[in-house]
Image 1 (cartoon, rainbow, N blue to C red):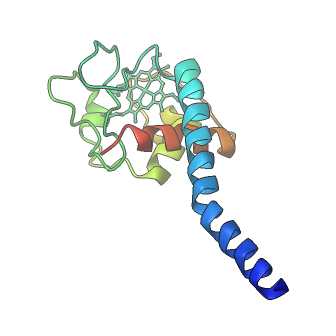
Image 2: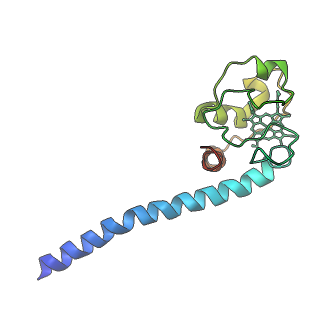
Length: 128
Ligand code: HEC
């Protein structure tokens, strides 16, 4: 009897795990969106349809740098040839002007890896 109860409890716990992981992801995306709103949104639309001073960041994760059609990039960014991997986006958030001298995005210094992580999770959520 006990063994059945234990097995049932373990089965329930295992079934609940993905749901828990899902809700953590949702919380991370929501926190990331708030941080994006505070740090990036005034210059970057999260979709390609809204007007945006900087390039839209829809689908930015995995995208080639400087590839939003009709956006007037700096020469430094347009010629960089880099791809916006999670690592490149972290380096950019941490010190964009050091990472890419000549960029016209003013310096944002987001050094806290947790904050980078949340913003990255949000950027992934708006990428295909
Ligand atoms: C004051 C306005 C401003 C803020 C704030 C800002 N950006 Fe930018 N961002 C720009 C501009 C302008 C560019 C184009 C830079 C260039 O052409 O050199 C840019 C470019 C980028 C690019 C390159 C996109 C591409 O298409 O290659 C990424 C990625 C980016 N910003 C991410 C962010 C993130 C993430 C934040 C918030 C942490 C942020 N930016 C905050 C103005 C801003």
